[in-house]
Amino acid sequence: MSKIKQAKNALLESLFSTKPYKIGIALSGGGIKGMCHAGVLKALEEEGIKPDIISGVSAGAIVGALYADGYSPDEIADIFEHVEFRKMTKLQVPDGGFFRTERFEKYLGSKLRAKTFEDLKIPLRIVATNLDKGESTVFSSGKLLSVIMASSTIPILFSPRKINGENYVDGGVLKNFPVSIIRDECENLIGINASPLVADEYKKSILNIAMRTYHFMFKANSLADKELCDFLIEPIDVENYDTFETEKSREIFDLGYKTARKMIDKRKRNLKMTKN
Image 1 (cartoon, rainbow, N blue to C red):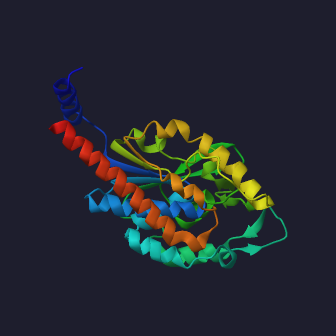
Image 2: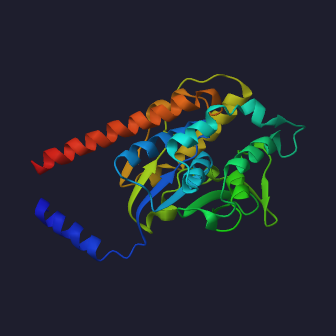
Image 3: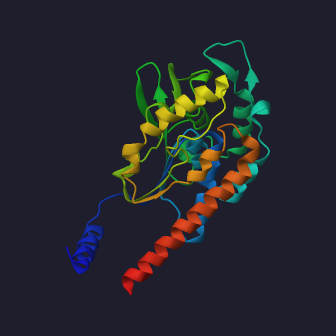
């Protein structure tokens, strides 16, 4: 097919598009590595690109909610710069999980201005895993904080969260990259994946082995969603950081920003060459 014909088809498609949103952004899970999402969002903003809808899982749900709540990427980075895993969690006698997360929930709740999905400035979809039914659930209305916490509840480490009488855990168990849940609603979809599939070195502690096992599972269920992106931004070097290495949040933010800037600039150069 010639480039002229392709351009005509693209134009016709855009003219007759019935999709409600022009730009959607999907944010994966990834623990503190999800801070790269905020860095990428900053680079996109510099190009005048802002989402009309956001989907998020786990760390992506946290960053997505704050961004949809009106916080700038730099403000999101500031919020998490001094967050420490040990101070935000408390070891407990195992009761569905080894750590309590009330401190982090209180901290996040104090930062969120929106109390419900309806209060947000940008529509948001959050994925959590219904542990009772063994299925993904997409939330888009009602109370916000409880859903964010449910989507971020890593099994075994944290106790399941109850919503409407049912138990929920990390959305990444079944869908760590929530592209498909908004794909049909968006003309263009940008995916930011903070959990690239890389078999790197790891420490042989119980926590690191558990997290590595979860990560392989989360990454494997992201493969199909990666193919659905119009533009995929995947900061590979983010795998050099541990999931709970919270003291490196600013570094991870900068990594996301630099990766996105390189990819955007490369794409712009390629488009310029094509036009010439």
